[in-house]
Length: 164
Image (cartoon, rainbow, N blue to C red):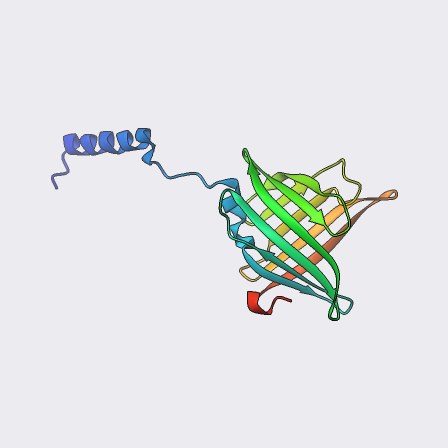
């Protein structure tokens, strides 16, 4: 191709026109920024094992089920709907034996998300931090008396067939 100044100008005008028509690179939707949560996760300690399973993002939402086991007995479970709400994410938690609560994202990157609901007693904040392909640290925090308490759940990726 002839690289004369007029050909370069013509090419620049064509590329700019495509950009104006909506052919520019799409911005990542909020739900896509947490797609690394998709799959099955396990947090294990001597007292309990927690399994958390996240669906892939469809319909601008992800769903999660979690169960906590002591030995072979279910002691807690939770359902979560994670939905886009404008440029934010809404974490709609439904824990066993409790009323549901919605937490809105206050920080969102490609490797971490933090949700907040200051009207909830405990927790008031929920977060997930990606620590590599097969590691996530989930955490909850909020007031406990005169202090702020934070509890962390170090998860490792597991095959969904073996998750609980």
